[in-house]
Image (cartoon, rainbow, N blue to C red; front, side, top):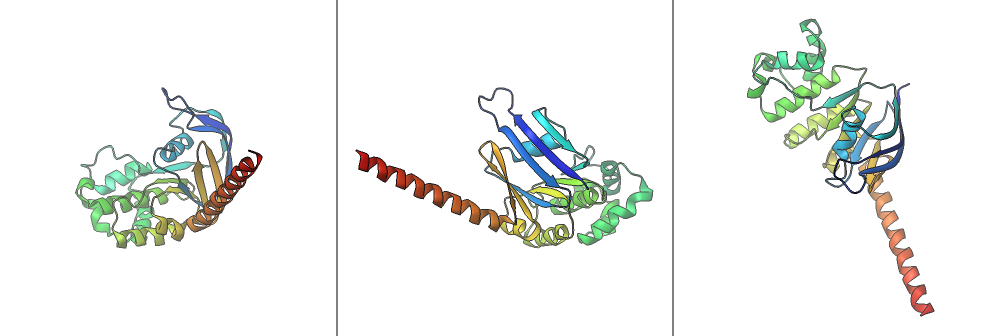
Length: 229
């Protein structure tokens, strides 16, 4: 069984006074479908880049998973979509059928394979890159904002597609999209990562309860201070 275990992980960019992550501990299972949430600038994409070995950090990350990042970098968008997707997956044409199976589930025609990648619509490009990512079934997905270039119908197609998958972390600001596809939430809370079982609504309920409890405690302390004075 694949696992990911983060222990006492800390990170800051050069020039930062405070740490972006401080002594983070987290353990996840390869079968989980996780949403990664947090305010802008809190480190969502940074965390994915740490996991994929793009950034140095302090602490330890132990895993037997192979990570697959979306969106993959397209080095030559003038090439045909077939050439681009085969380059991303590092396979040859004999393995193209695996990508085509995923494309079909995303509503993409095989006809786009002969078209230059840069002539596809942004939504088609997004779906094609997702198809390439999930054509490698032994890999754990790190998915960064897959709905950015999709209309409502496109988001629904991708949501239905990801419902069938297991083993990924996805960043999205689309609450309805996350609710439809995930079974766990990783929330960036200041410099820590908090793990919740459930979807976005589960996290929101716990977050609201925490804030309410903290507000009640603060009010109680303020009343006691006034009594003492």
